[in-house]
Structures are given as structure tokens and as C-alpha cells.
Length: 466
Ligand code: UDX
Ligand code: ADP
Picture 1 (spheres, helix red, strand yellow):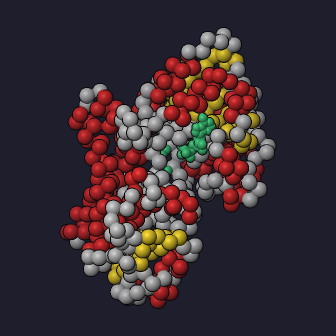
Picture 2: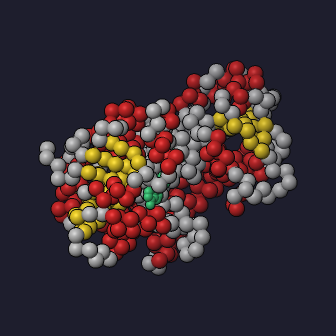
Picture 3: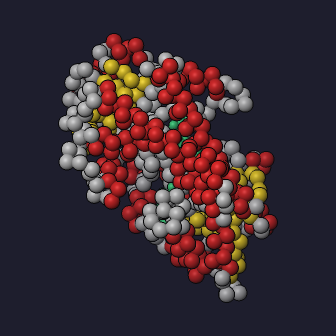
């Protein structure tokens, strides 16, 4: 197929930009894809000879990087030059929740979107299609458009599209290769058709849908809000199960077999994490408040409130079972990422749960198969403004490279991420290393044979079961 689009530039080499561009480069070998980022360390890691040093861990990513890097996929810090060369530019920069100012704690901070849009305005040449890829509040495309429309230079023309990302971390490559749908929002039919031509190389035509800019943006926020709502719903049921003697796994299975409901996203756990759910729901809440839809805002806000409540209730259960005090006690934390198969810890429930346990004076021995010491340090920092130790007894944490190290001399192991390897551990060996009475708090229900675990001597608490 002859491409009109010859060069793509993606601004932002993160969890979205990196894998998305790798798959586009792999599926469209006639297009040159340049991924740019201001962060030199991150770009160096993408270019590293040693593929285990890639900045993000994502199953299947290494293979694509091996195939395409240096061919039609390049990572660099040359933002301006690559903007100038591109026919199509994806904006995949970070949009965290604002820490201060109007909408603090709720609205997204759009400063990186704005600065990259201004760079596009200054450096783009000729006709350029600008694709909004970051998860953004509804009507952000309008901001991007107004900045680009301030263009006085008749040699430049811009078309803005919204193409929200539905990939989930840990399955990003598979989600990109076999998406449920590709959504494109925009007004310029020619620009939409150019983006369709790219996806058509591997996505069936009936899965590519188009709409206007705002519907596209709102669809993304709503899809994430619906998914998160299912998790908060099942987590409330987990608490009822514990008090009534029902079993959350059985209840969840029975609910999910109703074809009108479906079985996905009904797994109870320590609460949802990740960079999108909380941010997107809070954006929705902010939008509702702005338009005077108070009841709607409260409805969605409760999904986030239940998520905080779930994390808090787990910390309290741990303290209560360890005889009401964990000060000075060693606890093994198994898993720190927000879900299995990723090294990402953004909004991981492990952060709040660990902070609560530290606040009670515990000594945490933290093990995760992929999360680095530096990430944990950043997340549990006692220097940051939000996390100044609240008391003199504040505990401390140790990074363990091996799970056995993390289990040594502990009173309890707390499983916070659903890593597969936890299922296959030799728990007998682990029990020998612990102080008795030894506990396992399994917040993800990864332990499949509770009887066996109990027969080893463990006291087992599983979410929504005891
Ligand atoms: C999510 C959306 O799924 C994706 O479409 C969007 O583009 C970005 O946000 P992600 O955050 O990567 O993706 O992970 P996801 O698989 O959705 O999990 C989010 C959180 O929910 C994790 O902490 C996970 O452990 C938790 N979860 C998920 C549950 O607790 N129970 C479930 O049944 C499913
Ligand atoms: P996401 O999960 O949305 O991909 P990340 O934080 O992983 O978010 O990645 C976003 C990337 O965008 C970061 O590596 C950041 O350095 C980069 N970035 C932000 N602003 C700019 C900019 N103006 N130019 C280039 N890169 C940028």
C-alpha cells in the first residue's frame, strides 16, 4: 500500500508512546517512526543494547524493539527536528492530576500537553495531522486546536484528531495488535482517513470507528469509569462476604456468568491502581461539577472513595490480626506494582497500604519481580510533602531482591500484586523463615490451595473469604 504518511513523530516515550509506536512501526514498515522525549535517561534506556534495560517492562515489547529499532523505529531527544520532519504527530505526554491551583487533586495538569503543542506550532512544516493520544479531559483537543489555530504562517496547516488509547499495561502489545476497537475522533475527513489507513494494516475495518472529537474523548473517560466502577462494586461485595461467610470468588463467578454482565473486571483486590482510572474518573467528576451536574459527580466520585476505603480497610485488618500492633514487627510485602506484568507503580494500592503500615511503625521488607528500588523510594519517600512521618514511631522499609529475603524473620507476608510466580512458591520453605504465628494476607487471592497453606502452619487471610 502506498502511504501518504511517510514520517510519524511521537512526543513522549512513556508507557503509551513507546509500545504504541513500536507496534505501528512493526505493522507499517514503510513509515518511519520517531519517538522523542525530553528525558535523556529514558531515551538512552530505549536505545540500550541490553534489552532488559528498556525503561518499561511489557511482555512482547523486547521482540518488536529487536526487529524495528534502527530500521524504521528511532528514539531520540531531537524533539524539534522530528516535529519538523513529521506528517503526523502523536502527543503521548504525561497528564498527571494537578497538585495545586484550580482543580487541584482532580483536574489533569495539562502543562506538558500545552508545551508540546506550542513546540508543534513553532516547528511543524506544511500539513501536519496532530493526534491526541494521552488520556485527557474532555475538550482538551479544543485547547490543542486553539493553540495551533493561532498559527499565522500560511505554510503550516494543522488537523487535530483524538485517538484514545485503550491498552492496558502488562498486555499492551497484545491489546495494540488485537484491539477491541480503534476510536478516532475529529472533523477533518481527510485526516481521519490517513489515520484509518495506518490502522487498517492490521486492524479489521469494522473495528475502526469514527466520531467527533468530544465524543471520542468522553468515550475514553467513560470506558475507564465503567471498568473502575466494576472493581469498586466487587470490592464492596468482598467486605460483605467476609462478614457473612460467603466466598467472593464464587460470588464473582456467579455474577460474571450472566452474559449481560460478563466475567471480566470482577476480581476483588486491594483496590485499583494505574495511571488512568483515578485520574479519568476525577476528570469526569470535575467536568460534571463544572456543568452543574452535582448528583452525577457524586455518583462517580463514590467509585474513587470506595477504592480508598478498600485500601484502608486492608491495612486495618492486618493490624487487627497481628494483635493490634505492628510497631517494630517485620512484614514481607510481596508485589509493589499496581498489577502483574508491569514495573509501573503509579497509583499502586501498595503505596497507600505500605504507608499506613509504616505509620504504625512496621518494618517492611519489600519484594517485587520488576519494580526497582528507585521507584519504591520515590513512592514511599518520607521527604515529599504528602508523606512526612506523622509520628516518632514511623517504621522503615528495606528493598529485597529475592522473595525469600523479604520473608525472613517476618510475622506476616502481604501479597499485594497478582504476580504469577507467587502461585508457584515453595511456601513450606518460606514458612521456615518466618516468626510464628506466621500470617499470609492474600489481598489478590493468588493462593489456590488454602488448605495446604494452613496445614503448613500459616494463618491465612484471603480477601472476601474469611
Ligand atoms: C486501564 C484500562 O484497562 C485501559 O483500557 C486504559 O487505556 C488505561 O487504564 P491499566 O491501568 O493499564 O489499564 O490496567 P487495568 O488492567 O485496567 O487494571 C487497573 C487496576 O485494576 C489494576 O490495579 C488491577 O489490579 C485492578 N483490577 C483489574 C482489579 O482489581 N480487578 C479486576 O478484575 C481487574
Ligand atoms: P504515559 O503513561 O501517558 O505514557 P509517561 O509518564 O510514561 O506517561 O510518559 C510521558 C513522557 O512524555 C515522559 O517520558 C515525559 O518525559 C515526556 N514528555 C512530557 N512533555 C514532553 C515534551 N514537551 N516533549 C517531549 N517529551 C515530553
